[in-house]
Image (tube, rainbow, N blue to C red; front, side, top):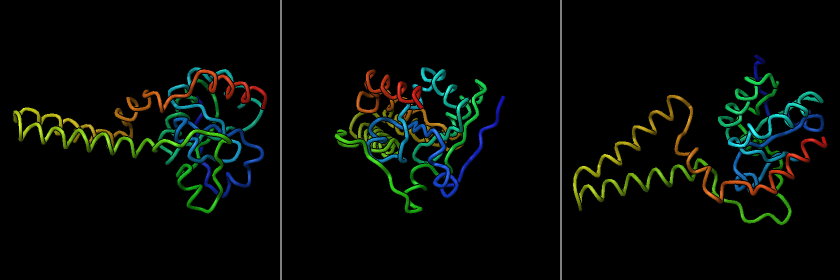
Length: 191
């Protein structure tokens, strides 16, 4: 099994012209701004893209990015299990932008959706408030909703995974249309 590596934003910027960059965020997050030349293959579609990513890795280095580095790290581990060598961008697109590098937006793209972290915070907060309100106004057992979300957040922090993000990623606004993914994979094959 290969071991994923990490590139800092300065090194990634100087090597950008020679890298195949794969952004594993949702299409809405990608539309909000991505590294120049990045191709959008959401994390939950990595398995489908394996042959094309393998071909790209055989031709040159592959850099996998996301918002903070967590999802791209997961993607790199999945790809490493299949013998595909990749690197992840330390700090993700957030670090890229914070270091003053430009983010590109697709031409004619629909408005960007909220980032996954923001969607998770909204959903978690709403379920906690709902559980507390139903517990006060209805039956105290509804407070289990709030406790469940709290336990999920602790588990998420300890394991650096997020079940709620995995569920939210399946919502229509977070999923690529089949034709968009097919176009992206064709572009990946053509590199």
